[in-house]
Amino acid sequence: MTMKTLSRLLQGLDSFATPRTAHAHCDLPCGVYDPAQARIEAESVKACMEKHNASTDDVFRARAVTIKEQRAELVKHHLWVLWTDYFKPAHADSHPGLHELFWKATKAAGQAKQTNDVAVADDLLNQIGEIDRIFWETKKS
Image 1 (tube, rainbow, N blue to C red):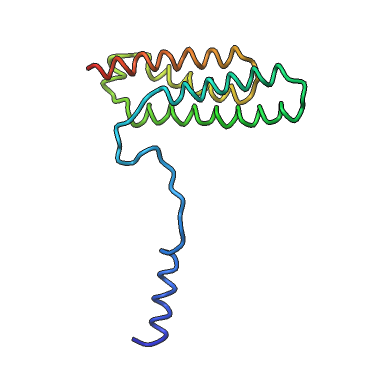
Image 2: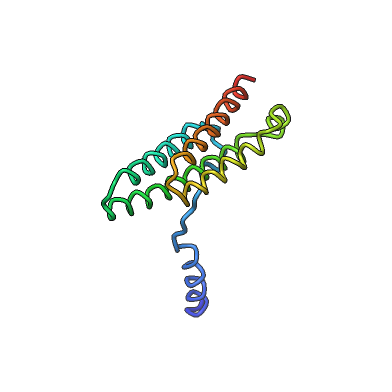
């Protein structure tokens, strides 16, 4: 093998050596799902709203908004993992409003990023509660 060929080969290997970040809940799929993940994040969203609304410290309020927005995004993530990885067409057939429920819940999580109205967080928590109820029903069958 010539030095030129070896050099080309080594340059080609550089692309494999570059680390790449992968993001996933689980690509096995692992089978470990629970709406509690979304609920916990939604509770954090509500708590951040309450703390923001109770404070007069601008720096603290800004931090509360940042954390609330991050947690609301995590709510959306956990809901979509449930919807796309756990729930099957048979679940939607036996629970006809399931698709709309997930749509409304993820929309509410997005709305929570835009407001500090605790009523929005309460609505989100209620929708997650309904998803939780249906989830555990499907686990029984």
